[in-house]
Length: 453
Image (tube, one colour):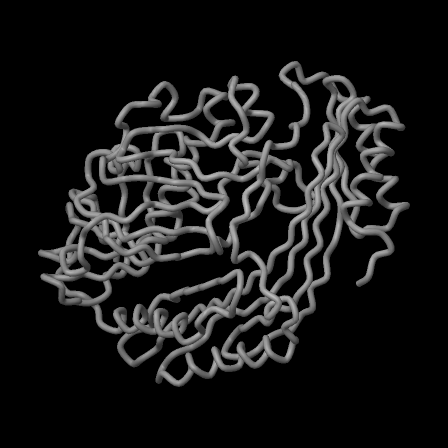
């Protein structure tokens, strides 16, 4: 779709209109997303869709009264109506006594690199479809494999933001992803479904790599381990599992809004060693080629790289402009939006859990349970760190040799305690289990494993 006016100029107009309507401050955030996606389901191509979505979010302040509205599409009349609605909301809202204004422009902005590719930007739908067909056929070559779901997508994303304090920024990027969800059936067993995904800002991900990793894991489930009983085990968490347990606990508590609201486990612990010295956590919105790399965040503040945890010592928290000012600090460039229809809030960009020095065979020494996926991580208690999740699949290893899948294995514990006291080894290789997440395998000791039939 071709628009009569450039997104950034429409954003400028929206801010002007808001001021004329009575706003004392105004911000307009525009996104355009174009591309194609192919979905897989039940061993077939289920759909090919063209994506063409655009819209604008308008945030205003009338004194300390705030309002927000959005318009789908970039029609000037719709945008004017969204502006009026945002101002109307602000005038009718109670005052926020903590409001201290929209951000000013950053002194400088990063130039990360590997954010945009003409190859991806001009990819034809036939190319996306052919890649999806290849991924499907590659998986189905293996006897007994069924493709439960998955897909391939290629997108171009444009972002523009301006506000009445002088922020005026535009950015563009591309991204492609390939993901597949498979299981294997035989006379003996039906394995759990295994999901693998890869993504890139500048090229098509390796489809062979995605399928091969999924097949490797599903084949480990073809045999059932014998004689596994409830007890304490050394457990190796695959990178995606470690992140899923870290997100609602450690990463939750490193958010500035959670800190200010008095709900962070790490409140008052900056400068203290509150995690294992083997753990270093970085949030990097400037990572070259990172899935969530941009020059500016959802408020127009420059993105940055910051150590949140360094060798177990809590170094800082992520903030957007509002919560940063409430804490007496500055934004860290971590205002995140789900899209033009959402307001900004503190969120992560590219999360990097730095690698350690352990070799793969060290992680598998002795009797160890390797957890490849979990179900129920969302039920983790962010205040206490307590979790109980189904490890599905979990594979028993003895001295590096896989003994089979352990159905019904439930692991439980306290993540805050375990990341401080139970980490034995951190792998020396980083992987990317999900877009924007970079993590190694982690081996923990003395983890409670319950076997439920």
